[in-house]
Amino acid sequence: MKLWQILLVVGLGVGYGLIAPGRFAYALGHATFSVFLPALLFEAAWNLNYRSIVRQWLPIAALAGPGVLLTAVLVAGALSIVRVPFGPALLAGAILSATDPIAVVAVFRRLRVPRTLATIVECESLFNDAVAVGLYRGVLVALMLGAMSAGAVTLVVIETLLAAVGGVLLGILLAFGVARALHVSRGTPIQIAATILCAYGAYFAADYLRLSGIFATIACGIALRYYERAWLSLTIAEDVNRFWDVAALLANVLVLFMVGAALQIGRLAATPAFTVACLAAIAVARIVVSGFLLLGPYPREWVDVVRVAGMRGALCMALALAIPSSVPYREAIVDATFAVSLATLAVSSFALVPVVRRAALERRSGVLST
Image (tube, rainbow, N blue to C red; front, side, top):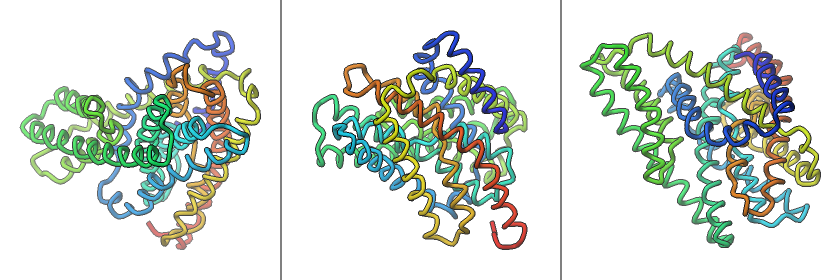
């Protein structure tokens, strides 16, 4: 999707939300996790190149690991200034640390982005969501049990890492099994059904085992595509690619519309101090986190692209809406999440194309290499 198309769909959703406020708020939370997210994650992972990921593993790991934790801490620190308790502040930080893979991948597919840069940004938008969701769940459990302490936070981080590793292993094992079964089957319907099994089977199996469903689905998509390219005996029909292209487009349109409809425009200024603190913290965090690229042999223009590609959207809003009503500051977190999502989508829509064009221009002039 192009940027103007994303804004148009979100705008139509906002218009519908003004007519029927709150109609899609509940549906967005459940549909995002159960219906749209597995398919969108698998489709994005399916189009990634394993070797490119391996070559750029260090910046990807830095952005998706320490970058998420740093963002969460900065948001919590900013909220502490306006006297929000540490538990709800860290929960808000975990929610807002997740960038939106739906918006990022949709935009990058339409722009002339150097392949190495596209790999870094798309992988960050996928992997950091898994880390953010794991952090969110751990903080939420600790908060509801009243056990927010340094030890509890450390335990949450360890459990998040273990769940990520377990999810990756599960996804790879499932992909291997499906690839072995597919190498004797040439039927397109069977292959489409098998990839759907990978997308949803990995996600829900990992969730059942208390592992990271997001990491499992991403690993399954990357591994299955790797096997398809590496095994001469395994050929995936082109119709499978077309199926996932169409499925991802439809899912993108539905999710973006629901995001717009769920936005409660009238509540964006209900908790101004809380919201402004979150907006300021996200802006600072994005500047700091994007600076991780300066530690490697990457041009400054790429740092600018990573900085403005940090859109928030459906996943953040779904996480915020899923907070139980008994959690303190729930409404403030929801309102701030809506405001940050709207602000980052708007900023990225205006800034992303110019910075990507500068990066592409530098590449064509011979300064960049991919």
